[in-house]
Image (cartoon, rainbow, N blue to C red; front, side):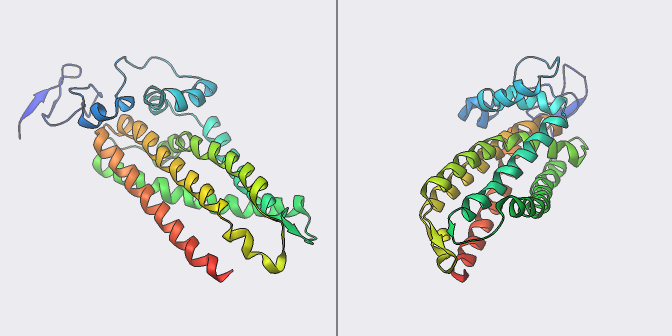
Length: 253
């Protein structure tokens, strides 16, 4: 195995490595970075943390620099707010559904709070599973031993597109779902608007996987290729599994 010495920290590294596993010094531009220029690693050295507002805007506008910044100094307040925002919007889907059921005598506020508590647990478990699998792969492929909490915090920023899509989907459900009664509840689930909603959600999750890969490569000192393939593979598995479960459950309603 041929090796070279990093000019930044002077350790010996594999000549095939794109970045130094010790200090992150970049030796070459990877093929994925040439194909997808928006994923190129930043040239400058990290200096100070962006604010929460700057990170939100940066995730959408300059993701490579933003996740490079998040990877260097993760915060907890921003990810917590994003987690709660996603949870509330997903729970509001229930209100959108319940509001379309004619003759229902449920208390929407009370029911919303109940659904919120149930979804909080399910959403957290799904987050732990999803980011946990990605973290294990990155840990196995990487050169740095990082806690799972870092991946989880970065992941909440990567779910920002999912939050925005959920807000749009909520409006679509309120506007296009038909009014029905409890005996015809299946009409709500079989309405074609769900194809649009699920399509948007899948696209947002895949985009989020690409965003998360930018943070993983910086934090774990792995290549863009490994980070991108890892996040996209796990995301595709989750998306396909959820869709198959959904298609199985709908006929039983």
